[in-house]
Amino acid sequence: MITRQLALKDGIPVNAVNISDNKGIQNAIKELGIPCPKSVIVLVGGAGGIARLDKSAMRKAIGIVAKLAEETQSVVIDGGTQAGIMTEIGKQRKQNNFSFPLIGVVFDSLLMKEDPPSILEPNHTHFFLIPGDDWGDESAWISKIATSIAGDSKSITVLVNGGKISRTDIDYSLLENRPAYIMRGTGRLADEITLTGKVIAIDTSRKAEEILEFLKSKL
Image (cartoon, rainbow, N blue to C red; front, side, top):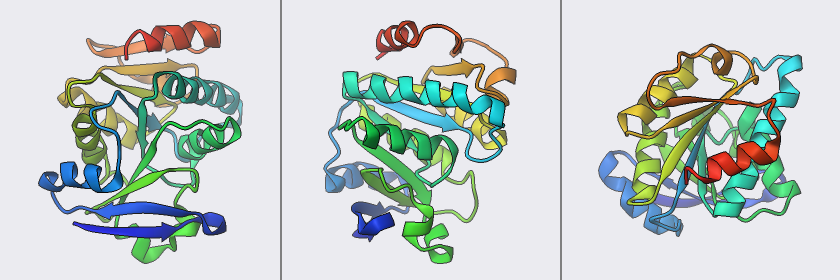
């Protein structure tokens, strides 16, 4: 395990840990000073490919997730890059002066191809750098890290928009017995995925306050 500090956009410093196997997760959590056990929200969904007509619903859904995390002081975990829902959750956290931990999980070889300021979302508070060479390699790690942080606290997955990799993210959450809440109306996978057992739909046309209160009851 290697602990280091990365410089993000505008020189913002952030702590990151390289881990190579599941055994390193708990030590990495301690090294980064992430509160544990703590309720966790795994945020998955659209990075690219979000249609213009879906962006308003996406922003509404992410706004609800950000407020949910703040009011419950939950940890949010996502893919941590400057794209789609990850950019939006970082923006919402900054604009509202929220304090919840926002953790990005990124495959480390990406930082050999791209400088951190050009690829990592600058409003995230911590990063796990994990083995891998391509998009989607982080999916299993996100799920395992979320389970480790939650411990005996509750955790949920929220899907906003999304594509092929998001389907894998949902599968890994279900393997961890983590329920997935699907933000219907945000486009693509979120409007197409089959609802079974722990995959539960939320209609984003409902009032934001109603959705927030429903999700709060699950954490």
